Image (cartoon, rainbow, N blue to C red; front, side, top):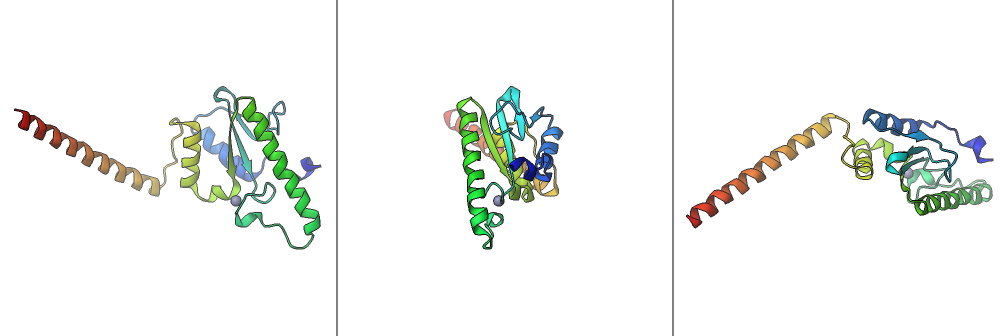
Length: 164
Ligand SMILES: [Zn+2]
């Protein structure tokens, strides 16, 4: 029933896949031998990424998850079933030793946040995309690191002069 509604290559999923590909990650998609046919499977890392539409998967507290007032009797149970199915799948995957990350559709509009999310999940191998914004924050970080190392160098000389 849901298969008719859920398209296989939804745009948000493609966005995440492109990002992973650019960073050199290997993955398989829609592995039907795993609970919930996960969108993106990084088998060697035993990690799974679901890219969920905020409405269909009922992103909690999200503006895009509102259930239409008309036809509520139709939508409410349907969407509730989607959510509980998602929970069941993730629980089964975790029990099987898979780490799972859910990326929400609305998070794709905040690229810096998405980068942070993915690099936290995948580890340091994930390089954030270069935008003028991340470039600027990287320069700022480098300046700060230089300041810190200069300070500790000063402290070292101070300490050795006290000792000497
Ligand atoms: Zn959302």
